[in-house]
Image (cartoon, rainbow, N blue to C red; front, side, top):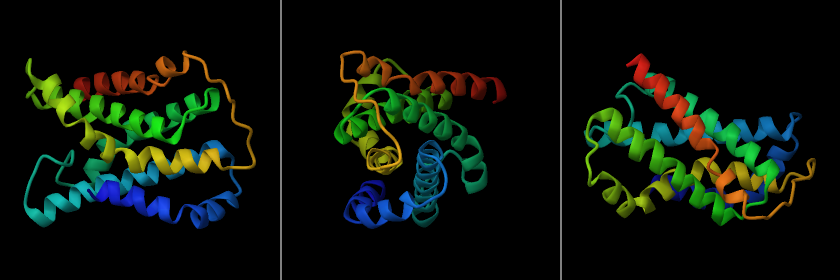
Length: 188
């Protein structure tokens, strides 16, 4: 809910935020990565804070916020960088980007998270599909502000290709998740 509210607040204040970000003296790629990364930090902080306030566990990757960020931020940065790459190649609507964020979270927290926790079973994919709207909402604040700001950045020319190849190409960040998942399995 807080992630969705954060996305809504961004939408309400998108124009003044866009004006502030537009004057940053760095290129569009770094703006995209910084905004996406800061958004991911906010989401992880929110998950951690909910655990602390309500005395629950299992929402954040770790009860220690610094360890949580150490474990999760490499995936977020890889995902955001690859999302930037796909958005520079093809044109996606903001709604499509929200759906893609849900797909990325479905595989990150849903599939990889349940596999790493040892809770994956034959019914897990069906349960994950049922709760897909939660994945959609959770990553909305990570992918939406960065994308909106990129699409409204007057300093770059986005490629406007719109053929069928753009949808399989949009799954490229999942390759980053595969590499990240293998590294996690090796380390832990």
